[in-house]
Length: 337
Ligand SMILES: *Cc1c(COP(=O)(O)O)cnc(C)c1O
Image (cartoon, rainbow, N blue to C red):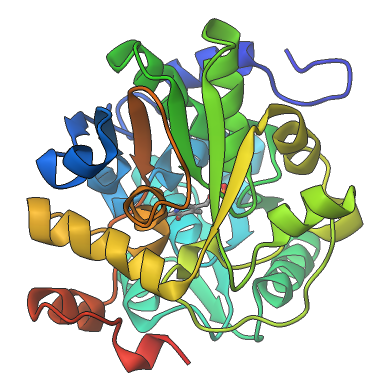
């Protein structure tokens, strides 16, 4: 079903909808409310991927990839590297379908996410300072143990699975003129972009990344996938990591083709998004899940008509939730150096 270059297409997203059903849930689009719409003067819908099992949209791509395995590969098992949410989604789907799962994470992955992985009973490997280190470990284990790698973003089945979020959104909110999509490896952006462009080519697709590691944005500017060998702690830990450098096969070319605008946010703008979700709705969004709201609240992007914001994940650290409940104007020190 892939196109001539081997990239996934909107037809792959359509097939993924059947495969993810029953594990991933259709998520609601909820009005952002007057606190945001009053000063923007446009209708804003929040698509709450934060209510998915495991707390993020990653369960869509993980389910599509795990359920597509042939029986022999499923019996051998899967391996992945993750900033937390993808690993948790893979471990969850694997446990539900009886597939052995091995998850590699770097030492920068927050404690809450590591604890959630431990609770899922997967084979957990913690080591290395970056997401790239964790991916090297996953590839080594795949070779040694005959496991199938489920890449966190650069995999056609993962991209098509994430795209189901976009296919749903455009049915729920057909008047939307723009979609704000958190952007890291670009699996979400590519899948959602393919699904939306296929039915509504005029919708503006806006990627929202964090200033501390805008690897996709830098790659788009450079005209080729760039690499980065250092990671810093950030509120948006789920947007951490590179895009695979010259090894990137799908997400860089797809994002380049689909993206209209890219916005970069600093830590205070990410915190503003998290605080708004909590203060206005009592929603807990992790930093990576709140960047779309942060971009609108801080005026980093101008929008003209109804827009939809993908609120991609709930998995904030407990200290961040406590700081939000206490009304802290700035994010807690422990996560920001
Ligand atoms: C993974 C993740 C993203 C970014 O998705 P990519 O496919 O890597 O671009 C955004 N938000 C959350 C909560 C995530 O877990």
